[in-house]
Length: 423
Image (cartoon, rainbow, N blue to C red; front, side):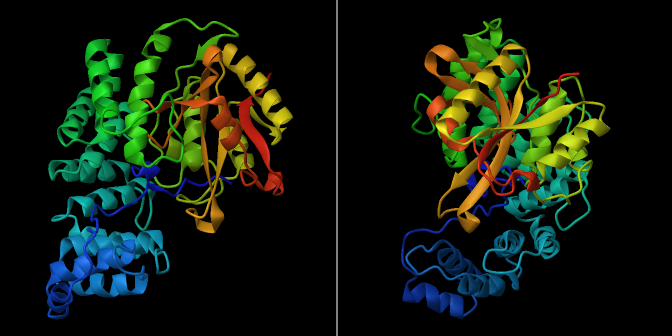
């Protein structure tokens, strides 16, 4: 069963506080101020205990200080407490309680407004209301939250739960760029690209690529800020390929309409993108609602395939072994599909101590390849529109594997794909 990669990489998808701890230890003066009711000092201590900055990590202590500040009406502290309850960090996850804190702070805190919009977009702790999420994100953008602006721009571009509006998308992408949001630069560059304003597109992607060190390709486990910079570099490289006709055996790049996935909805959103590439107008949440699992939870791939039948499309799930031979067969099959104009839905598995339970998964689209450079092109619902980024064959071999995509996997590691079934 797919689950959103729970890391900073898609922090358009992860609810996260904008507060950061500094490196100074909690001085006696700071502790004294906090003890005597200084809300700013209380919140500073909360952040330090949460992030283990100069102190031993202690979520209970973080929440104790944050609650004291929140009880005084400090909006940033209310956002902090809401974030902890949403993520279940040191406390039981309670999205409804989290949404309540975000609501209480949203008029004063751009971060809280951003988080509240996430709740409405994904139906977490509140009834799902995408137009309301959009309005809240626009409010957050006006308050200076760049990621809210770029995410709202992506919604207007894809028409996810609302009517598409290119003019609104451009206004919001420009606002995000003004606020130095890296994803805003990616989206703005894509708007220029779609308008054939190629010099402006290149300039926007060059600017975002300069924000972090980039390489020939990135790594799917990069933090979001690094991923945006690498995406800018990748999009510059792909500009020529996106205008060229495919050459079977040499390169293919299939246009896949990008959709912002929201909280823990990568599987259904990737399938919505897959369906849109075949002419459908379905959204990620529409697709999710054709499956059995609730919003905000992983989706079994057997349900994803069954959902395609409800839409009048016919897909199938195939798997390849997780060994070297299986990868060779999987990529040969994938290239044949791509040469035929058919993208594939694939699943990644990430392993390490940084993930809850030691592992996490993510579903995305395999949209193309460049044979002479052993590169593959992915369309990823967890990053900024157009969602394209490059991956080496070595990294694809490492990450394209899963043993939790479906109950049908029975815990056996393999390389799964959802593909179009032949009539």
